[in-house]
Amino acid sequence: MSKAERLADSVAQQIVRMIEVDNRFSVGDKLPNENDFSMELGVSRSTLREAVKILTTNGILEIRRGKGTFVTSNTIVNCENLSDIASGLDELFEMRLMFEPDCAYLAAERATDEEIATICYYGEEIEKKILSGEDRTAEEQKFHESIANATHNSFVKQFMPIIFNAIKKGVAVMTKNQEVSKDNLADDRLIMEFIKKRNPEGARTAMRLHIIHAIEHL
Image (cartoon, rainbow, N blue to C red; front, side, top):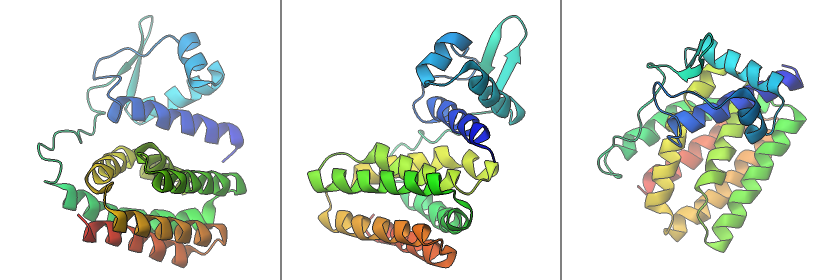
């Protein structure tokens, strides 16, 4: 995958987050015009067009000639309807346990040097937030997203809004638990170390332990 393709893919994921995580756009909403949106995202118009192309191919956006680009009716993974933050959280983390260790495995195998640097950057940002007692939700989401991106598998990325939701809810429940934070620090360091060493089995085991530790504290 070329640098231009990776950038377009990253922009596509930003748009998905705006739809499925940030709730900025709903079904039927029109995206901002190309000039404004590309400036907001900090990319060229051609990169934005490529990102939109990715999302239209996956049925997430629809281009209506002469009218603009719209969110289609079959895009939203509705993760926000859990009436109780604790209810369903165990199942969300169970799903993560089935899914994310293999993402870490593939990331260790396939990540570019630049992608490994991004993974480690967000891992270090999580550590800073934990040590300062600040909310780390955004950094946790970026860390796990950067691992998913490094798999170079577009289907994997479709699951990220659900992972984001699990992280958001998990951090909200466990953020005051010092034991969880201690485990989180050690686990993230281990994940980063194995990915940097390009050790797939180690990365998979480290991610599995990370999620098991979180499940134990739910």
